[in-house]
Image (cartoon, rainbow, N blue to C red; front, side, top):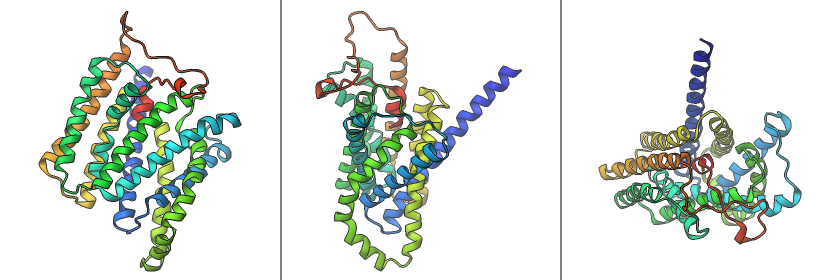
Length: 345
């Protein structure tokens, strides 16, 4: 009886963690799109900077004030040598995501982001010469095919937004790969990651945001009919962005890698549906088919990855180089892929 109760509670906790993760993720995406489209605040660098500031404050409050998470101590030297490069890629990743969200619909942007597994595998093969089983390559075919079909049939296609989303995938893949090497030896969770990276990201982005968007923001403040209400929404999106990181930490520790992978792909479908209900962007039949094929391909890719990870290594099969203890040169950045880390990003 007790075992049954524990099992039921585990299932309920997993479902609740997934639902709250979906809620925060979809809300952040919708609010950001609302800021760009409905509030006419077309300044993605500044929106990203607000997110970083709120995340830096939130990480400090959770770790230092409320002490809900223990602080992972990082050597001062490693903060600049290892954390700062990760923060730079992290900054580029977030900025490109917001830039793409300004120019293309949520449905198209989310579908392109599903291309990340393919870019991750390709980068690891091309740059780090990592060996992949043929089944991994085969599982990427529906993802690539779905992306191509979605891009060709997108009724609101914008080349700049498309390129931003595509380069965002490359930045996400780079962040995933470098995290395995640069953060080797540090067992970071999402809260400690934000605690260390958000201040660096703010420092990197603050000056470009002021120089490139400062005058535009001043003009927007003078012309917008309700600037203070709009600013509340903009800063609320930053708070929600931090809450999303907290929800990711919770869902990772409450589910398995397979469940996380499937839930992540279903989350994209939920985001696409909710965004369409709110913004009513035109979606053709073939476009929706391409999106569905991409999501099914991502789920299949995760399934193949999981199955291969359960198999014992075959004698004579090339092995992935081990990640070094402390990477000191580009040649030492030899990544190991972690199921949850890649799927999370």
